[in-house]
Image (cartoon, rainbow, N blue to C red; front, side, top):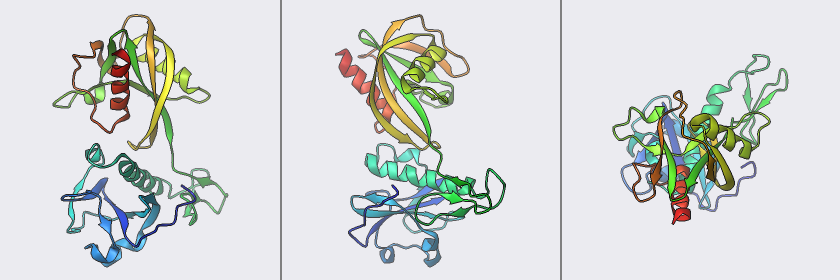
Length: 268
């Protein structure tokens, strides 16, 4: 994103963030779009706008406000609430807005010498001119994998979903460690979380996952050996589910759902 495509129009997409929420329209595209003169932003709000990139040849701007100002557009919503409601690339740009905002918030001071950092105006970066340390937005790589056993798929209920009114069963995932390949991470995470060995590990796709700054790399794999033995710190339960009798799974727009649907097709 360092070399941004020049926008072809005066209109733009506006990602207005406040206190971890995003201002959304009452209808239509949800994300505010149009010429700045046509949108009911207070004059001072766009003084600190930051260019994020382009979507459909239109510029995308991040605007941060200190509190929930009445924009006259709609309401403030969580990023997760946009899943499945906007185009994938627009959701990814919204996720980029959250990650860039978090980066500037958490890198005001140098992690090496403690002096104030300053924004670089030609890229998304912060620099300490005292010790020359430069920082970029954090990206945490992790794997996510759907595992097949004959006509069944392994799904687990994670501790973080326990409080949901409708618990979501999903695939296994975990962060990569220093010096580890993605395939080795798949094998390690699966064995640690459910005690199984897998084979035929195949890369499928990736998805930026801004909660808060992950890059999910999706795989499929086949069961090789072992009996399910869950890691209680991570999971509540895990089981093999027939593809025609699945529990509640992640919503459309998530990489987990894509991997589950791909595995179902493989089973059929």
